Image 1 (cartoon, rainbow, N blue to C red):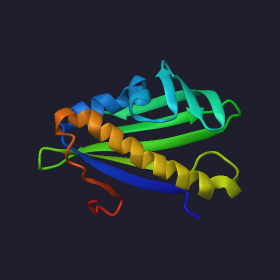
Image 2 (spheres, rainbow, N blue to C red):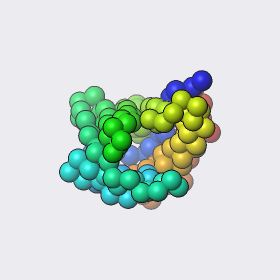
Image 3 (cartoon, helix red, strand yellow):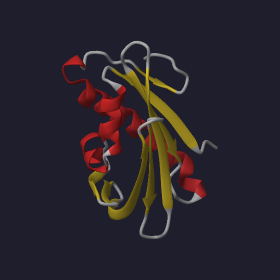
Length: 149
């Protein structure tokens, strides 16, 4: 049973610009589906199962390009996600994201992870479009294999 998924997208924008955007929790509603609000260590998620207010810790390191999240749910469950923005020699950057299975009962993990993986692919495309602005025509994105789509 898979317990994580790794996805990445190549973005035609400077690494620092993408990092600064991703590290700001307040930008999550701009490129993710579930986040409708995020600021000051709190967030509100809207999902098909309903609305939930959570604690949100963001850990970012500009030198390494890492941005990690810790989501604390009202029932005490904790979700985590890690990401990194790396520069290329082509003047672009690659944003990679590690999606962990959500804090749900083990029998629900596979379905929940598959659904979230599909959503993440769409979210990365949205982030790419936001960061590239006028250069949105390039659609290079890949899963952990590094294959171009």
